[in-house]
Length: 244
Image (cartoon, rainbow, N blue to C red):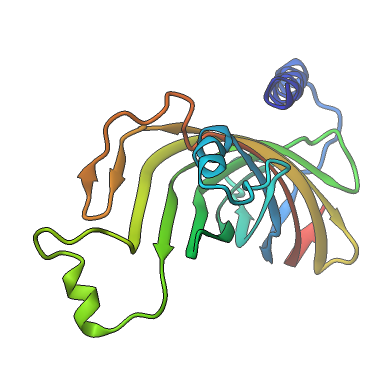
């Protein structure tokens, strides 16, 4: 539902742009450039991961969103009015752990994405910058799974890979590297000519659902709903020169 509402708003805004094309209403082209920090909340589908964590008898990962942090920047290109180009990237993780039957168990979920940003700032909105656009980029989603008992030493570490040794300690990493197209909607509110606050969001549409494990080995049988697609809500504070 969040995805549908967001894309509908994008389409509505885009329609308004084309409806105004060619009319001379005295709009002034935006200009400026900025860099900023972007705290972000991401909402991945963790159901297939939590189904396995439940069987481990430890707390499941939060499905109400996870905090990631990153940064970005942009500059208006004067060859095309109100068009700005830049880049962004975010990364973060969440984890759960517990002790079951004397074994320490832990699962860590990591995500990161970013790329080239292309945005059009709506010229008929004054004093703030409302921009629709997209991020063309790539990212990585990974899941780390750990189990251990007691302390570690050099000899026992190598015993784990000796023939006929039962595995008590486990360390696996599953990862998906992907390309993405991310429609976005951002609102930048200047609090001075050199500082602006951002609120916005987007939807990461990923391409490539090949999951690898450990030493880049193919992982077969992954659930069909395990993907790197995710909706996100972004905030931020930007520093630069603003003329909205």
